[in-house]
Structures are given as structure tokens and as C-alpha cells.
Image (cartoon, rainbow, N blue to C red; front, side, top):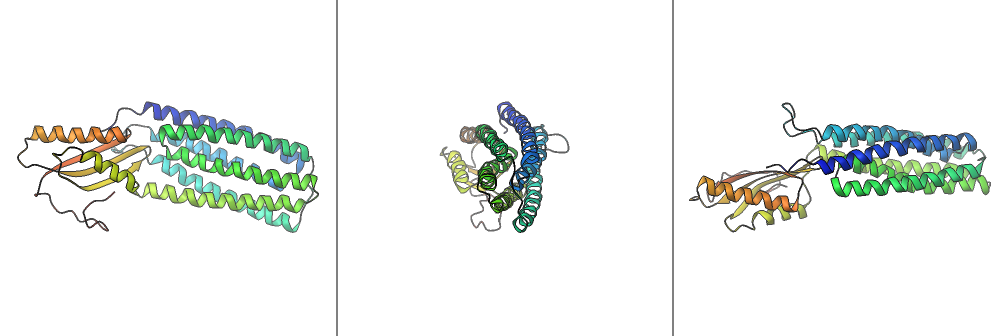
Length: 309
């Protein structure tokens, strides 16, 4: 049983990905101007990151549209994992950015250079922080509506950018106004470490999604509780759940009284599906009814009870 068309979800993701691309373009232009005026390694680090942000945002832009495509003959479960693939690409780009920025920062630590036009650089960084903060807020709203992994990935590195922007601001101001250019290079190095950690987190989340990691135990319990709300269902086993893009995929077997007619069993199963949908509106559900006491034994690695979520 599948939920109705996810028009609201798709609209939310499409809108915020367009916004993400637009903000990335504006940030690149601002930081390129500031770099030319100041020569700051922290600004250069931030500019490099914004350039990769644009590539990542473009990947997200196309991924959410591909993931929203309906199932076809070759992709019976839809294209939702396209979002996780985009997140995987993003993590690789962020790794590359962190390595480049870290290397340049180390070179500048041993060969510090003065930061010029500090006022312009500081103003650009402040505007960048404001724009990035606004984008992260908009992405938070979209994630609450859609649960999109691609948008979560996009938000993750923009949130890191937001924090890194504060570090860059400190570095630029120190180099320009305190005559301490070494602090500018140190700020660039901190940005690199921050990005590296963010890339690791994003890589792990994308891998979990692509490898069909089960949903949290709390969600599995909520699913089971919803199904067992009907006293005619005496048990649940072979419960499997995973995320396919923003859609929760649920499969299970339920135990029913053997004397029930096919029509009665069907009505009970449909009722269980509807209760799950009440708790998880974006769910794709498959329930197999078994006559109580006659279900086949299905051994699951690590699940003695036969349940797997």
C-alpha cells in the first residue's frame, strides 16, 4: 500500500534546492571579490568551499528531481536512493575541499602574508554568514516537510559553512586589524578540519541509506504498536523497514486467526496499513498475513525473534 503522490514534499525539496544554488552563486561572487581585495587565506578557503558548495548544490538540485520520478519498469522501488547517491558525491567534494584548504593553510602558517583591505573582507564575510544562516533556516523548514536526505546533506555542509564563517571572520579580522596574519592561516586550517569532520558524518549517513540500514528502534516500536492495536492481529514478525529517499518502506508478516475469510483478512491488513500511515504519512507498506501458529520460520541474522527493522 503506497501513500498518495508526495506533491508537497517534492515541491519543498525543489524550491529549497533552487534557493541553495542561487545562494552559492552569490557567495562565490562576493568571496571572489573579497579574495582579490584582501589576499586572505581564510577567505580563499571559504571561496573554495563555496565553489564546491555550488557543485554539491547542483548535484542535489538534479538528484531530488530524479529521486521524485515515479517507479518504472527498471526501478520498481522508485528512484529515492538517488538522494543518498548525491550525498555520497557531496561528501567526496567536501573531502577534496578540506584537503586543499588544509594544505594551503599549513603553507601560510610557515609563510604568513599580511591581509589587506580588511574592512572589505570583513563586510563580505558578514554578508556571507547572514546569507548562509538564512539558507540553513529555509533548509530546516524543507527538511521538516520532506525528510529529504539530499537536502539534509546540503544543509549539513551549509551549517558547517555557517560555523566556519565565524572562524573565518575571526581570522580575517585578526590578520587585518591585529597584524597577526598567522591567525588568518590558522582560521583556514580550522575550517579544513571542520569540513573534514562534516564529510565523514555525511559519508556515514549516505552509506547507511544505500546499505538499507533499518529505522530507529523507536520507529520500529511505533509501527508494531500501530499494527497490534487491532486485537485480531496476534503477532508481528519479519518486520523490515528502511528509508528510500523520503519514503519509509515497511514490510512485515502478521498472525491472524486461521478461520478468517480472505476478505476479512484483507480488511484487517488494510486497517493496519492505514494506522501505520497515520503515524508515518510517507510510507510504502507491504503486509503478508499468516494463519496463527502456521507461519514459516524466518531466521534473521542477529534477530532471534525473527523481527528485523
